[in-house]
Amino acid sequence: MNIELPDLSSPQRETLEKYLPFVLAIAVAWLLARGLKKLFWTAFGLFRAFHWSGLGHHGW
Image (tube, rainbow, N blue to C red; front, side, top):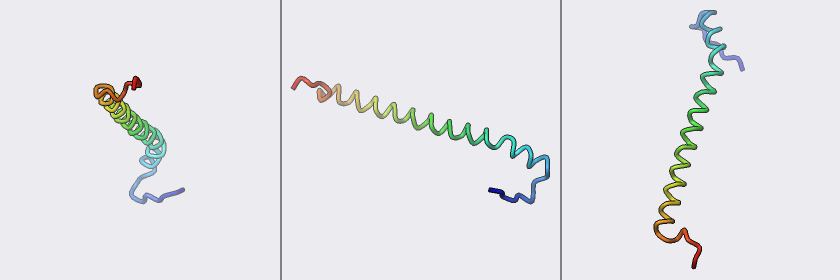
């Protein structure tokens, strides 16, 4: 996939091609970590809510 960027000089284009994969990987890792953190706190909150309400115990 070649996208033409006519406003970039050759050194700028080389720098972009060199560092863009790293920047994208860091962005994806950051978004994934953020999602995992939100998932953890949501699951923890639900666990505590069920535990405190007594629904978390299986002693019917």
